[in-house]
Length: 404
Image (cartoon, rainbow, N blue to C red; front, side, top):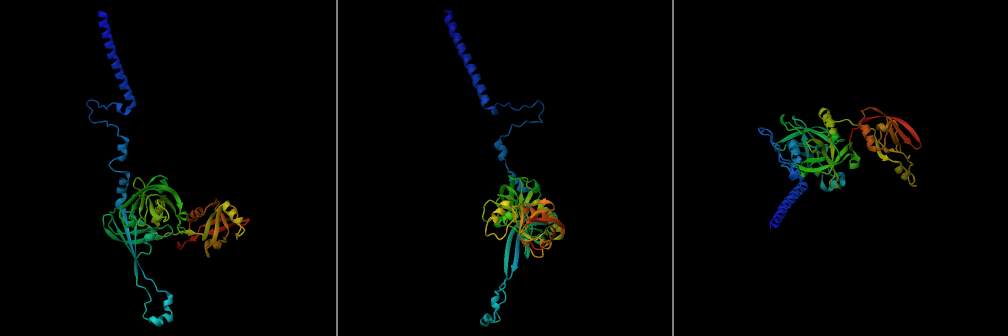
């Protein structure tokens, strides 16, 4: 009689043991699926209350935070960004035909010789370079202005005096007298900028003061010829941060709030494409403008076009082509400016420049940079391909007098 009872007791005990074992297995399985929940709680050694180990922050919390890097960057430079208002008075003369005696017979000698004067107003941006009140902006913002007014972010306004303008690089320095404790924009280095870096544009587009836009660096060393500004000598930073009229002269910042460029140009036929002058170039030009009021640029005096063998071949197989071009890499001379260094040295229209001081020249932008980096009066040894012959010419650079 005791054996059935013992058997039932053993079966009940086996059931309890199986249930406990199954529970342990399920618990271990859940710990393996959710390891983040299985980490042990931080421990603090008894008596050591000076150190508290914080729990690990989730990625979402780390990214969102209370403020963004853009806020921090703008706060670092924002008070040094200024608005620049300009006024220019122009007087237009009447059509010369109005001076005709036949016309005067009907209207009399009292007819005015000039139209009433007209005031043109402009708007741009800039930023403060040092505490004494030097402001850097674009040349086209203040060029030919009769009056320049600089407005700080706190609302104070000061009359600005243009200390120097360089049309070739589209840069200008303006001085305001506002004491010696002005906020200064921190300058970075454009040589460290990479494609894909953050780009923050700050300025006053269309009169909307203190506007911030965010984008990235789209590309580097975009030549002024590619941008469509052939009278400039610049390699731009290209960005998709929104730039509009009124942003000109304002800073382009990196993610740390340092100025890496000066917002300068846009393409009216495109969206999301803007251009800024690299700050390393602007630093050198600003120093010369502050010291001398102008910048001397050497030049040769040629209008040029990048030439490749394929382009030359296409020209040469055209029966209507007026000239046969050497099928080489170089710079094709389209025109030689009269009385220029190139003209004096014997460079001719149709020549292909292939070497300068022993360095191969493969693009118009490269030749322009070589000349820009030379000294005034420096003699450059220029090798040209002229038909089937080569010529070695010595060209002494001279100062470019007018950007246009």
